[in-house]
Length: 171
Image: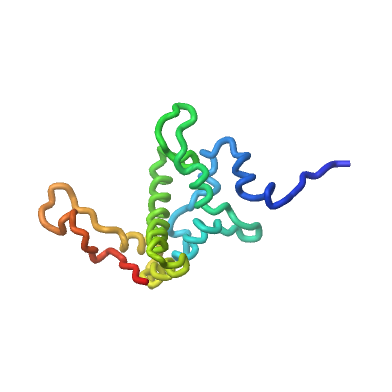
């Protein structure tokens, strides 16, 4: 008779699965966040980070927060140098751009949470800002404008006053 493995919370959780991963650099293609346009709103982006992206009819991918905690800043095992994320392609500009845009929203939400808002409230503040914008449009709207080198005038970089593109989160 065939013996089946014991399935329990400890043997079937994400941490148990993570312990079996030998090459985290292959995870990006399966678990990476995708393009901003694939998220219908800020809430779905936050769920991808906090709960894992839903896979219709199957379940969920792991929460990217857990993936990032596990492999987000590991030394390269072969060269023992640097601190690039072991699970994200480090020489892929498209992957870097996707992660950067995704993290743009996550860091804003986490900053709001650190000021005392709940995650739901922080997401709602960004949702209220969104109105009719798509996620890529909202990203462009919220980014602070960079001043070109050699350009004279405009706001002083040392100024701590918010620019017109900044979102002020009130409690």
